[in-house]
Image 1 (cartoon, rainbow, N blue to C red):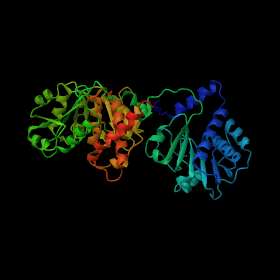
Image 2 (cartoon, one colour; image 1 turned 120 degrees about the vertical axis):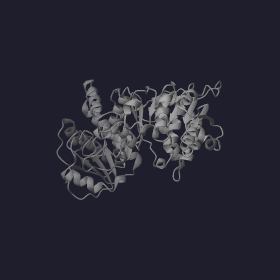
Image 3 (tube, one colour; image 1 turned 90 degrees about the vertical axis):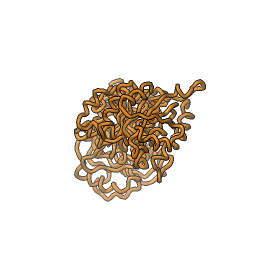
Length: 483
């Protein structure tokens, strides 16, 4: 399996130019693009009246190809041109269509609309008749197929600055763009089909999260595996009245495959934790030196879930950093450094993982999200600043590495919007790192599995359900590893 690349508008444009320079006429690329859109329509819809809305550029040229190909297959088609074709390839496509465009401003009465007005490179908000059409179609995305991106949606940000077409299906070419995976663009695009139109290989540091990105490196046990070989993970518990979050992380780590999982608990919380644990082990500590000693020989350590925003949490993070274990730093262990983020950054290694939600991210990296322009840019700059892996939570969770790699999680589940699910995610990440998975890939795999497990349950999900749902996802991955 090949990881699914995400390319910027400029990178796609460069790939187009390279293909043309290598001998593929631009008209051929347009023909392939239009054919891909027509095929996607025919696969999903029965013949019906279609209105193709064409802009003046090459996106409109693709639309003329779609109109011609659907008409050749017997579909009733009309074309509405916002403006005359402006590029040679678009003019050629319009001539090949051969029909007479209907007035653009006439009432829309078709059963299916193809949005070929503007592509991902549009640099200004929709206005005039294009904006009016977008508003008219906004409430019926199931009847809209967009070419490249819905018109009005900037390809590099996914954040429209004005009116935008809302599509039920978007057909793009060669690779997805940030607009297809970042919100709100993700929802404005509907189903996204990526069509191969014959562009050459294109390097990118951005990928869409999925098993293609990490399954080949997943730490499956072998017939010779034993518990010590499968990784030693510890989770630091909060005080006696705040122990549940650590147990969620620990149980998640055990379910994800770590061979030995131990909760390191303040002595006053030992009895509370012991009453709720079975396969997860328990060890007490009272000082940072005792914590450091208890974690001296482990592979990964999780700290933060309900740890408390206290001086104890801060010194415990510093103690764990001295052990050499890979750290997963979450929740309170992030917030406790809000007044001096550099104190945290100074002890992090490139195999450590920070897992902030946007509010926590702002505490460690003030202003980066506002400066953007996207969550991708903010997460990348944060990872470079911290010199660690940063997993920025959200519907479009972004995982960033200090070397510039980015992975965007597009299978986010709404059922995860409940207390404690982040603690489970931390457990998944820590477990995979403990088993020897590279931290960036572990964070990517954990985020994807986390969302897939939530979708298995659906409505009514609570955090306690997630560890028990993970084995079903793991089973599917295990069976697909040789596919």
